[in-house]
Length: 338
Image (cartoon, rainbow, N blue to C red; front, side, top):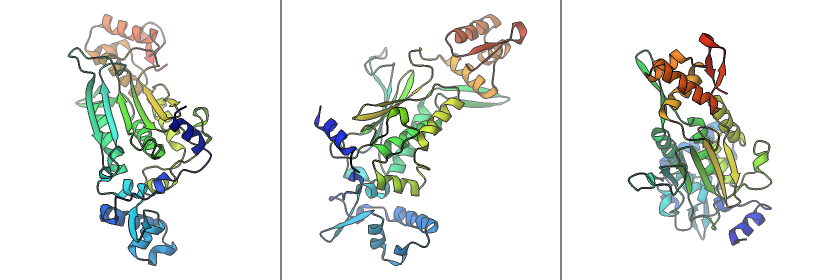
């Protein structure tokens, strides 16, 4: 076992406090005063009777563990810096979110022109800025099926935004911030057939992949508390349910969760693992079925602007591959989600 693997087993027996540690190279001046005042106003509205509101500004920040005093100097805690810092990555270079888009279904498959990466982006800033930036970019760059309603066009993304956001939020909130892996970043990886979100550090405490919905074990207590206060997370333990529910409502396979001990991985598939990536025509048909409940051959013919024979072949092909199920006979035949 590596040093980190040994540490990960031992740390599960105690409560980590890395998010509460002071960032000694940073001072109070490295926190954004406007963000702090906005946060304190929100907190005062929610907890108006808290005893610390009559204290000086700096003392309130100390009470809330946003800063700690070391040798007479106020330093942001790691959680405080990540939530309210002017530019946290000055002090913690690798605490960012990376987005990688690959050509194929593996990290080594090359496009005809020779490149493996179709896109490579980095999202920095506070936790909220990183999450918002990453989610917006990922949603804008994934494939979409289109529906035409009269004179308007509606784009249906490959993966639901709720599921993508929850996976990224969970990765930020639950990653390991220990010194073993503080030099590692969160990765969002787009492949031809799936989307992955991976964070350093496996599941913490007694929670297992089989009991994700049942168990609650917070590795980063202070960070989670601050994220709850600003509504980046709603209720602890609800993120897994939100991802599964969003995928189910879109007729997509349930997300796959993998605990690697040194990392936690979430995978979203467009079709069941092992299936081929969907064509644009298949995406359009699935988008139509998810919107209207079913599709008939004549509707597929009009949607794809192909003839009756090709429309029938496409629907039968999707039925045989398990993407759709058939109901009815002859003119009453329609295709629904399986």
